Length: 464
Ligand code: FAD
Image: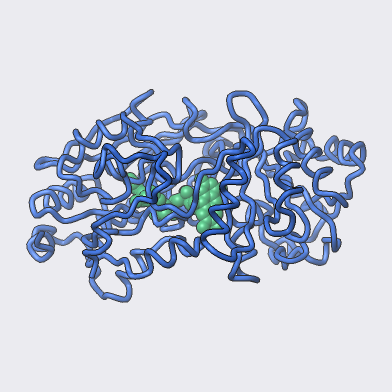
């Protein structure tokens, strides 16, 4: 590979090679995991390239293919598993200059990959009174392309499910990495070849997303003396057909009092809470529902002054992986897991078994019509061995773990090869230079996911 020859072919496409800035742009939020932090700290690209149009993306990929330069796409770099980290060096492909909303219709929006999700909602709200159905809690920073390639769901998933559900992404325009890069429009089932593939088999340049009616969501926090009462209330809220909610997340004590610093004046020591975002039309009914469940409504966003509201983060920035972020700000030994509890009884069992070693945080989501418990529990980290044991305890008790301490697609996800994504990579990235090291199936189609071994990408050793 010749990075100098690659760079010489890029014309006036902006490039950055200041090693300090390049290293900064070569990172994501991998450091939430002590395991990944130890493995990936030294990883860096050699240059950051920032195309401004699809034509420029094609120019970059044409040159990368010709000179065999590894390309790692990057949006805002808020991913959590080293997804956007260049394990083989090479070039970071920064998509954030491609940030235009291209078309808004009453039920859908089309935008470039680098559009920031919150900015998209501003435009669609003004134009048609619509907003994205769901967004990650990194809404104010994350890009559309990064969410589709690296994310799964978020605020709104209690109503609309996740990105993998058919209908959650309407179309993608991608660019392939070949001698002559092609633009492909993916629709229907084909979208899943590239969605959540960490940019290993195509660069997303545009996406079309469905819209939901926009509301001035009201933040609410409800306290409970016992976590399982909070969890049961949260489940019931999501099952209520008449209560319109965008976010429902029970968090066990001591998470609120220990880590939700700016909301502290409203919180009561010892209480677990349920974080809620409620449509204005449902606020009164929700108050009633809270009283039926003997909850303690400690915060209502529509009853505080505008000045106070500006001081406080929105409730969604206490939820999803922001819960972990807030804990890490106070105690940097904390880490987390991503789990799925098949029923409230599974939640209870794990909560009782692991107690304060695993301060429980659940996101209530909808999956195939069922209300489900997606766990993002905090972990008081002691060692990698104990972390593995905690994962085993989950699995032995029938709970799924999507390991956030692995940088590969497969180990973090379903622990098996996604044949369609692999086949598409053969077609769209025949030299295997898009985000190398993230798709095990490409490097080692025979890797045995049941052998209990961790995948170690050889290319990590070649990084300077
Ligand atoms: P990046 O981190 O830049 O990239 C993510 C992945 O996509 C990488 O593999 C990258 O190589 C690839 N990629 C980026 N752009 C493209 C492109 N144009 N084409 C192809 N591949 C591309 N995730 C959720 O799903 N839900 C949440 O609620 C959530 N909450 C979070 C909270 C915190 C505090 C943090 C730190 C992370 C959270 N995440 C969450 C993870 C992450 O923020 C989201 O997935 C986010 O949408 C990623 O967007 P990004 O622009 O930062 O992508």
